[in-house]
Image: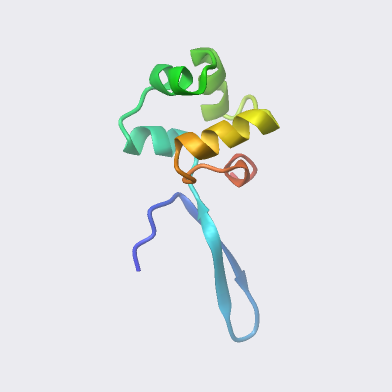
Length: 85
């Protein structure tokens, strides 16, 4: 099974493991899709500096912007992806 993400969230108990989902960081998504911060900012309607701050984890998106990111990345980058490092 090939998983195309930076991290996988896994819960392990005594006999089983459960894969809850992939975590793809924004910078990984942009790199894999050959998209610049400027291009992604234009798609979302925000400034390039804002996307750069998200990429480097200096800032987190707002709830409204999380929804835009989720839609723009077709679910590959989610709110969870800004929590784990």
